Length: 101
Image 1 (cartoon, rainbow, N blue to C red):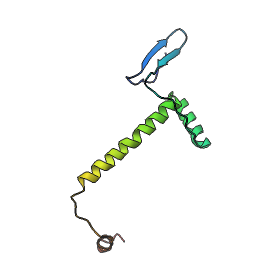
Image 2 (image 1 turned 30 degrees about the horizontal axis):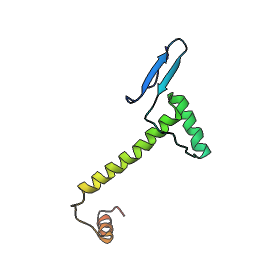
Image 3 (image 1 turned 90 degrees about the vertical axis):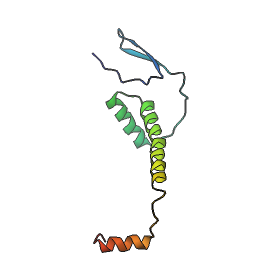
Image 4 (image 1 turned 90 degrees about the horizontal axis):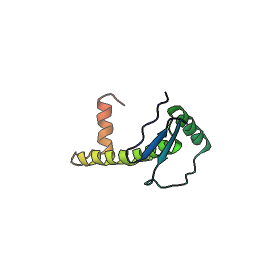
């Protein structure tokens, strides 16, 4: 029996078992043209085939991760905002003192 990849909850999907066809209706997604480096495109096609996911799913996942990483970075900066500022020279002296340089 073939296993289907999970579909996000916002997507309506139906499977036709007799023909092994999965119909996915995605009214909320927008179409876009993206130009990829040929080597990157080939790597994505290979990964899509190995993971049984579409190229669009892989690209959407990668694009979603970028803002999430930015949000994490901003949260860390906010947490560390009250830490004392060290000059570059002081950091170098400390590293030399501890034998790291």
